[in-house]
Length: 232
Image 1 (cartoon, rainbow, N blue to C red):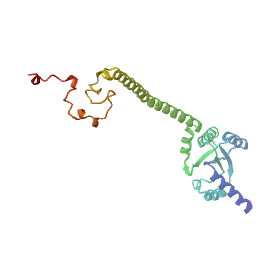
Image 2 (cartoon, rainbow, N blue to C red; image 1 turned 45 degrees about the vertical axis):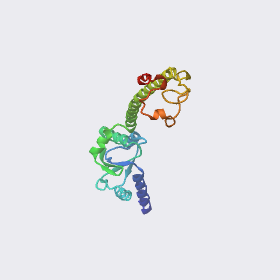
Image 3 (cartoon, rainbow, N blue to C red; image 1 turned 30 degrees about the horizontal axis):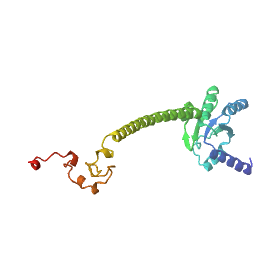
């Protein structure tokens, strides 16, 4: 391979590392061309599967800041560059390796963190992103429903309490308006209310009535008891 071609290959691989969520290094020794095509079809849109040259891949990985494959790039190597759901990519590789034991999963990297084969296997056991999002949405919906019920109960109780208070105030207001002594029939000799020294409306302020200023022990003139010593 010419120097320019090598440089172009390194640049392309480095860009693949940078633009991918993760990468899984495999050894494909013993797989046929048809089996490699089958693997690519299983990966679908979640990952691209490319046969690579070890030396150029080491250089490209260093340029991209990936050091997880430094000691693993030996033998016939191919890398699955993850473009979609990492769980689906790991599951497709694991299932294909079970059906074709000649495919060896050597390691991987996800969001910059290295993954051992056992960790990739555990990743493959997780539920897909869509299932997890659906469960999360269901949990959030249940939480929101519970919160709505929690807020709705005190609010209804507050409304009932306000209605009861309003009815009580209206009842007391009606009773006060219907009580005797509020019109001019029970007023004093000058039309004043005997208990307050106000006029018939009974709305004069306290500071304008000397009768109210006293301790309230004096009774109204019309209701005063007769003085026995005066007649004697």
